[in-house]
Image (cartoon, rainbow, N blue to C red; front, top):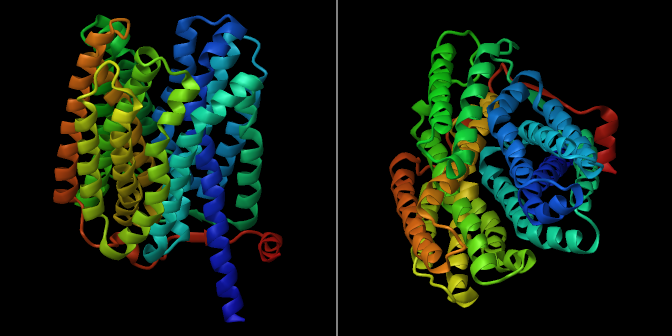
Length: 486
């Protein structure tokens, strides 16, 4: 009987991981397929270029602003519950976008998608952290990271095919069956967990100040290439962001139940993992963004052809991430993260020597190096961060880590955009692109030093201790357990 129960518990863990991967797949897929569809959306809805920019920015803003809030809501009200609400919101907004009749519908739907994603993404990390023991957590997070890479890999290919042969609306309708799968598996396999060590009280002042601060900062970073870093509007947003984030820090020290427990950052490992999340997103997303422009504008590839040429990076991440997760369980995350960041730096350094007419044969080795490096970083980084905090705080910790990644990627595109010229002048664009990639390589090399200095070499941190008495684990309904056995 004991063996059977243990087997059922083990099965439930892996079904839970499958549900989290379904949800993450949706979130990451929508980061790439929408870019391919923008020209068709413009033609069909008669949208302006400003609307197209906000089609991307509305999602990024709502996601970035609410990630920490989404994590905290899960800790208070139940991670499974908040995750399910996020899945439903994401699927419903995807259908709404598919039936869009105007620009306003489109932008509103994308903002709602971002809200759903902000509820889901921290929950995927916190649910996995609470479901798997520390000695299996790296393997689980390696699978999670591999699915993320798979979605990024096939997004441009699937999006290009659907837009060309079906319609742009189909890329949003695709989310509905994926969401249904995530919903069904979660209902029948995933246990509820929450943080019962603190009062179930929302920090409204904290939510307001962090939302204003991150919203103003994200908008400033998104619009800096267009408005100019020194423009009055951009400077005003940066001032508002600084003031609001300072107010958030002051509020959090005085409230009884803060949004973020700043003692997280007393752990050098959590601080190091969060900085690495920021740095690696800064380097990778900027590379993807500007090399996509290079391949389409300078080399003449179609969006689909350009997306296919990024496959060496994403396929390497798919292969390496599960392996690095298992290795992190055995040897610890620090060495893997450090080596991965050095490979990312080497990739960007290599690609900085590209020229007009370099072609894919020159870029391919850099893409492979980038993929191997990212594969060595992503799972160990998440494992290090989540093992460094108590399991009861996993939701907000996952939100902080995801926010670091989002802001790092946005800032990377904005900062490198200040270096890189107009693609209408190919020689100048390629020369400035090389300079920008060198900056990215330097940032990644600094990240390697950060990882080696701050991240613990041990395989498990605070989470290796048994669950504290205050943590509540609520099992699924009996019928759900029987469904899993079937």
